[in-house]
Image 1 (cartoon, rainbow, N blue to C red):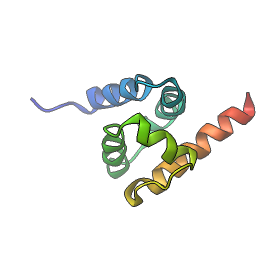
Image 2 (image 1 turned 45 degrees about the vertical axis):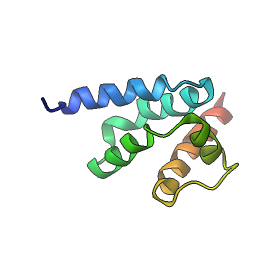
Image 3 (image 1 turned 180 degrees about the vertical axis):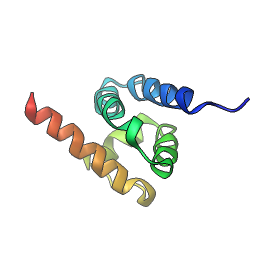
Image 4 (image 1 turned 30 degrees about the vertical axis):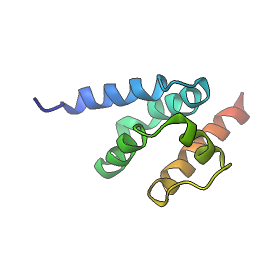
Length: 90
């Protein structure tokens, strides 16, 4: 059975908030809440693949501690900018 678009967004939002590390929950969760519904199909597909990565890899990539894979650089840059802007507003 194919996943409906609504079910996919719900799954991705839940996976963004329940990563396994609190740091990545707080980075990806708010970003997913704000951006998932307006993402184009290609970006949704890329983000879905990103959600399969381990937090131990994701956090250093998004924080800039380690270089990220080329396919994720633009998306992770956008996510990092969003997280920084949220933090500065608090």
